Amino acid sequence: MPIFSGTGGATGGAEVVEQPATVRQAEMKRIIFVMGQELYGAMREFMPMSTEIARARCRYRCPRKRLLRRVYDRMLLLPASLVLFVLNGPARAEFSVCNQSLDVLNVAIGYEEDGEFQTEGWWSVGANRCAEVIREPLKNRYIYVYAEDVFGQPVTEGSIPTCIGAKRFLIRGTKDCWLRGHKQADFFEVDTREQERWTLFLKNN
Image (cartoon, rainbow, N blue to C red; front, side, top):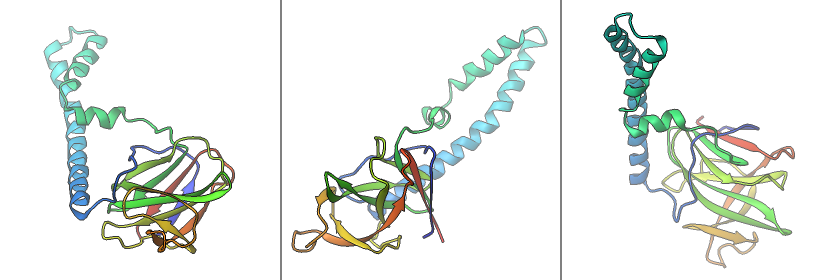
């Protein structure tokens, strides 16, 4: 899976979860995403129609502000999910991972904390969504990332072996993963170029 990274904001979000997403959860997220796309298309069709209805009722006697007000009033009748599509602004994450594939990805990260390397996960990131992974200005130039699909198969290629957990985890140290009851996975390095904010994009081949 190609990796693209750079500075900038990210939209949407995902919280750290107790365990990676399952196949059933991935399918539900995909259904919700498709429904959202259909609702967004319906909203785009609704707007011109609402304007025409308002203009017809005014019959040239309504001031422009009143016309716009009528359109706005009709927007209030839209489902809350559509309003969220419009109002959802840039997230304020300092390090985000954006999933630009068509599948749900489970993401873990690694970084240095108090002189020792540690790993943390999981963030389940739906298709065309972003996870706010680190919510403070970056202190480390290098962040390490590992991602797998809902079947537990790696989708990123890395060369830095370190520890991950089966469920939500925060693991300090990189040695003896199996002896300590963890699994081992290969993380890849992200150079943030000493920026305070960074967004990583994961895309399909």
